[in-house]
Length: 445
Ligand SMILES: [Fe+2]
Ligand SMILES: [Fe+2]
Image 1 (cartoon, rainbow, N blue to C red):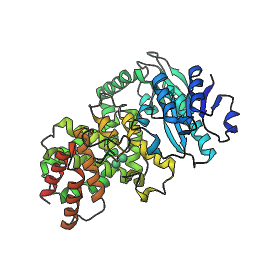
Image 2: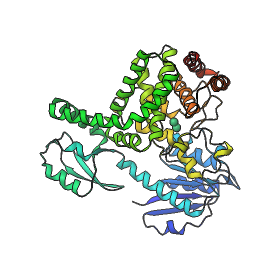
Image 3: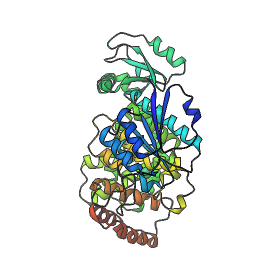
Image 4: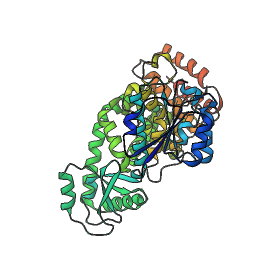
């Protein structure tokens, strides 16, 4: 079936796209004509200008949301700024929604449309969960069907549910360079509980598992040392450090149990030293704040810690992870694609977190809100100080603190400055108690 793209008020030359037999392009030039076309067509993607002679594009966006729902991907291509055209919930309604400035060249627009269409198709593929091929090596039958991915939108079944299979088939695909097999999302809970129960019941396999875990921990030793340097400076009691160590280790194990996340987290640990250290520090500092707030049940500490490990998982560099204010002049050299990536990374990470089986409540919400700020200038939603959950506020205060002290000497003058800045910034709404918690953490320094 052809994918339908509706271009409302877009005059750029997109011949290359029109030549693609899999895509049908519809063009309109006014708000009224667009609304009329939408009566007869359900497009997959709408690319719209904001300014029209007979009104503005917000009318088109609203009409689509009301009549067709958020499944239709909406892309702004306009000279207006994203603040002017993107509603607070714009990216949440559909994570594929985008803003592209009209200053971007036509090739960028074509590439963005193709990319969006591919991702939309991939949503079907998204119903499959990726599992390392190594996981299939210890069995000869499974309680679900298993697939390989041939392309971004094609999978084929290679193992039938409950049917015996030989290891040769796995070796054959491994030999072809395939690293992952796929199970359907609906089967994933059954699959993983089957795999893990089986693994645990085997002493030999348990030994292998222990070996794998010690290798994982070796990778992170350097980063843990950085964290503990900071903790030492904060004069935290040894018993509290012991609890936080255990919580962090449990979080990494929990996340590693979700095959869809394990590989990403492992590569973060191996290749992105800064990000991993950054995540661990937030895990510890948010735990210390919760401790001072007397809200440090194991569940709360675990929620904060899992959120800490995953919150920047959609970013791949220290530089991007540290961008605090997208409107700040110092960030103006970033191109629109990078800005979009930054703006959406909390949404992407929050969605990924849901891949963890029996995920603790609020973890996704903490991740989603980690760039919100009490002055309402954060992203992606620009929430005010009472709209972020308090546990999310603990996380925000902790991350801001971690970023401020990163690579700095914690002398008295610097600490007084942080305390003053933070008191001004966070002394409101749900941020008040976490701010006090941080000040209490710093009181002994
Ligand atoms: Fe982030
Ligand atoms: Fe971060």
